[in-house]
Length: 425
Image 1: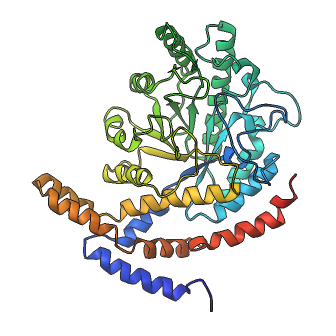
Image 2: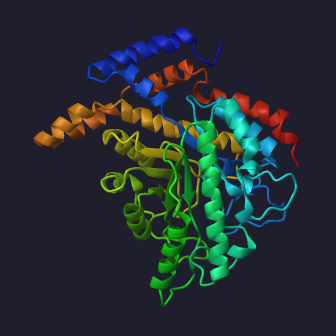
Image 3: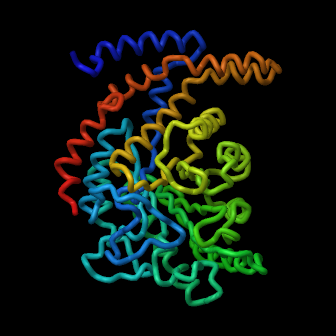
């Protein structure tokens, strides 16, 4: 007897689930149609532990740490693209790629980061055209000799600042090239590690320097049909525990004043502070936001995303606020202790399941209860929703999208590991 349900069993279960949701005024077909249109940006750095292709001797810096030594990490761009292809094939829907500047392919030649050009990413563009993925981009302001002091765009050294300004400008040009070539806007996100390990006496000057650097980076306006700028805050990092120049308040003010996207990373705040609570506030004042969905365990540890309360709350805020066309969803985690392809698949599928749960809510009925003051009814209905057959709807979506149901995707990942990953030293 097979361990997997037949297509008819999936379809029959979905028909019953449809009826249950219809009794609450929820159109499950419409929910799946909407879900199929949501693209999540998968982060390339999960595949190789944020190593990149600049030099095999480059040490990970900027307060970033990838822990674990699971075998089979990608050693070059072809292997990384192969791993991504496998991951995308196991995830329902059509999705994007989030690429860092250190994943340039320079033909073995040394190219400094401030000299990177679109041609150094030609193979990525060709792959994206062939596979139908949009590309998002990031300057890499860490793991570099000119970042060893812990400061880049906010450095007191004018030469250091200028180098990173030029790098970020180059990345914007590359990002716009992606957008033009692929026909979908590239979101280029600026994150820097700048900060102090111990308490500074002057918090103001580094922020003034950062503002000046950003003003120079964003001086040339780009067509939003092809390119969108974003800035990302952080509360603290390894080596910047006491003070980070690019704080949430700094970048919120900068984004509002300069009409750029604000990036909210779910691991970049206090352990008890959640970005789901910030979305409606931020989107009252900025046009669009970028999300980096991650999972912090006690600190910004970038664990693989699961279907947690906070991920569900983020999805609910996006859907309940009708923000789907104003929120760019990307993932940001790197776990080297488990199969890296599986990490992508688990994290993306969990994020999509959270979005589906939000799309299956009778939001109009819930909102009416709230406006009328029927908080008892609101609570009762929210609890009742937790027992409804959303799993049957998800299984039907996977069937529609021709991807494995349940954890059967692990069969393909284990076969891929045996065939490909096990051969990598």
